[in-house]
Length: 238
Length: 393
Image (cartoon, rainbow over all chains, first blue to last red; front, side, top):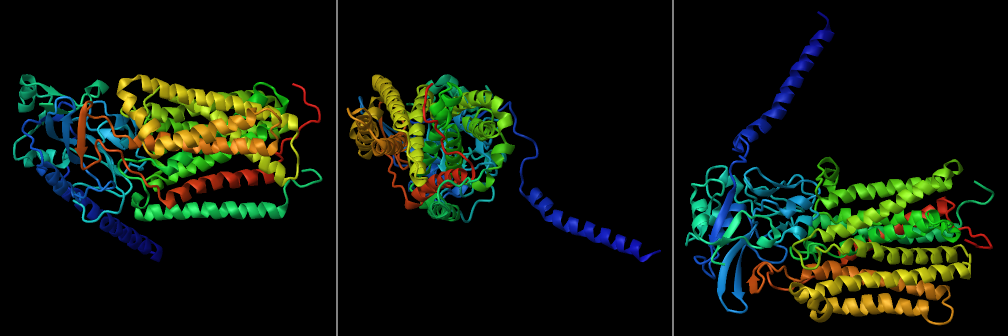
């Protein structure tokens, strides 16, 4: 045997070892990230029915829960992210007052997805509209296009993020319908936190689901229905 | 090259101008560094006014880059000798302004480092994505067009190239107008009138930039422009200004007729604070009436008068874009018609915008890039208009 062969063996062994050491942490992280292995189903359309008659003015438990769940600061300056906000509305002619939560309406035909140059804004098969934080270049065209002002731009560096909800400076973000919770079979944080059960979450495509039954039996509306976006979030009592 | 060097204006002057432009471009780069490091928090932009001063500069440059080619089109497509002599300068200005505008637009992104994603993940339904093709196509076509003018063997292709550029720039400005026309949700935008409005605006703004550049280059080269040529271009500017004013009037008139837009129009034209002021005093008076008075006032309008009119048209352009882009976002979205609304996210309120110095630095950086490309192009290439003593079309 010559020295050259020995050298080659050692080199191959070292290379394999180095490759294993390089890949192993990634594999481990991939495993611990507890992502759902199967893709989202197109048979499902997640949505919400918000009962404004049950929503109390001054209560912002849904907002607090959203901030806690998604690692938002909760600050409300013009440059802070607000994924869900409480809007107080008053009918100018009748004086009737209402309070309701407003967030991404998870449209069937989302303008934000249409205008996004890089396909970072996308709609999952189950109807959830999301932003791919790795593809977003921060042009903010989706914020211009959203009829509900549901999106926020991350204006400054972030710290102490929730590992399940990646965010990033210079990208746009919005309500994810707590997609990480839905994938674990849980409800969105706002729906769970509402003390008056004003937020009913469920599958709009399943005729036997509670939300479908409710939408069949009570009057509900989509906000800015004239735009024809077919929102996944419906409101009762408006 | 021939006996004399292609550098027409003196060496020293060129380097002084280059240094001045370079300094401003550097200041723009500093703004970019700061914005990248700290995030957009250090600009005046926020979650309500998402596009700010950088977009005013970028859109002005891109629209003017298209309009300046009018000079070339009148030469190549319609065969007018006076304009044909100016086609190379118009082409250079177009490339320069497009480069300046796109640089500003790109460096204002939240993640400009990811710009390549715009090419690798192309969204066919996005007008932004279409514009990426339109802008890069414009660079290529104008470069080919310039080549057909500079290279004798390519001269036969000059006319087809001129026609292609003519068509392309119409589509390009349509694309710029569509960025706003496709925003169905906002009161200020979402109108099919916007693409043609942008096209007519581009005529006036592009020609105004051309006349300013021409005046500067003639002065720096110690040349004098034939008064007859000045007279013709001046009259054309007048026609373009009237045309653009007509389009802006039609846009606001149609809005005024729609009851659901009357609140927005009232805000922009009457009681919106800075916006009506900029619109009437800045755009209407300084950007239209005054230049039109200078152009059409009886008696000769000589070079300084044409230069003043052109500068005023450019000033008016910035005023109009500020009102259109910032004012259009400042007025609250009408999510609940017929209701008073309030929230922690500015619903129902006029959004505040205080542009920071950094945004202006970035914008002026874009202008400086266009300036550097223009003076360097003029130094390297033989692009000074060469007029024959007698002009007859």
